[in-house]
Length: 113
Image (tube, rainbow, N blue to C red; front, side, top):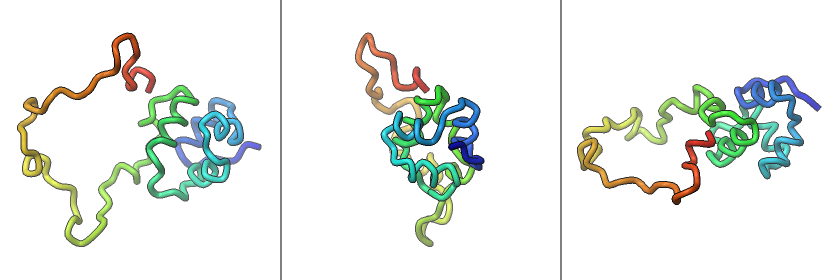
């Protein structure tokens, strides 16, 4: 059964002609959780859900991100705004150690998203 989507995830799922049940099955999610996510009822969805939905729908996971999820959310009065990166960092940009890479012969995760 198709539902009227309110989120980017719902819009992409409907555009691909995929049912909620099929997407839930393909990603290992519970259908009820997927429905709540599509209705915008989950404020902080697990990144894993979004990545797996993106893979299944053939889109970049950032295509599924809602604007509200990208805004800073204060968890207490001490941190009402995001930190200023240069005041937080202990190393200047470009001086951080190399980040791990995908094993040889395997695509990096970003190649799929």
